Length: 456
Image (cartoon, rainbow, N blue to C red; front, side):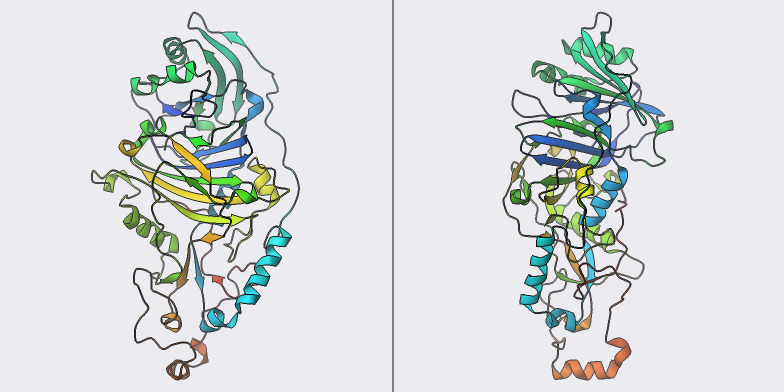
């Protein structure tokens, strides 16, 4: 979704909104973004990680920001944190046998989970604080820009970004200043500038030099800290940079009792059914399989080439868990206090992470997103169980209401007869090399779930 926007729906625009801008002949487009919103009270840290498509060697971003934001509030985030966060919370595939399914008592499971919650980190954790915000070594550089009515509050460099924080008296002067500095803003984007200016917003203008950028189609993640009463993520302006459909993953890091975070002004789409048997073809991955299910559930493919004129807005909850624990864990392991502190959240007293997956076309973006805290702290994940005949009678097959009618029940006479036919070599689907969390033998990961490289 282009460079993401965050603007309140109220008259006080103390969050953010932004757009890619090109050279007047072409502009980059956006298909996928990851956003982390770390929020405690009114203290908010926004981390933005965006892809881009286009053949320009340089282009720009224009982002309204609250008055008072300068280089002390803006820094580059650690890209590996985003990768770990994605891997930690994504759908996962596990393997069970009858012994796993029935051999662990409910009381034992509850005792194990209580112990993990008490330890504050499931498989582990740490308590070090991360470093401070980026500070501009050259200090604040203020000045005006000709007769445009634009006041340059700050100028600084961050990675591939050359950044200015400016205040404008009106949209006409802002457009003139942007043009003089190599930014070509179309009428659709410029039409909203007056709203931000009237609300007292300043602007963060960034020039991107791709010669200094990572050798991927993702820009270095930017992190901005600020205070705001509102809790929103406006995406209307962002839709202007859409390639036709945009995919957004939002990670909300909140206080433990806030529980799962939801979106109040768009209807939630149920996630593809989980806790069921799935048969992944040899050489395939559960993430590829899940992408197909997500497309079927939402009716929206990830690529505009296959959109076929369809429009829509969908969001679903893919993960919710407290204080970095996991059962089962992916190969990224649990989140630590260091990880969450690096995302701008004071993690000493715990936290709750929600993963929301959104997909939408620009026509369907009718209003900005409003979030709410549900206070539901029950853990949730999308877990898919590798198909095995042993469990066909115990749990449903993904996409079906029931397991196979003729499947032998665990520990029935037919079950033992089939086991005897197969011999001991066929009695286990475990592999001790698979990642486990907290010593649990009930669920073993089949895949090295690292950073989810989407296909769009």
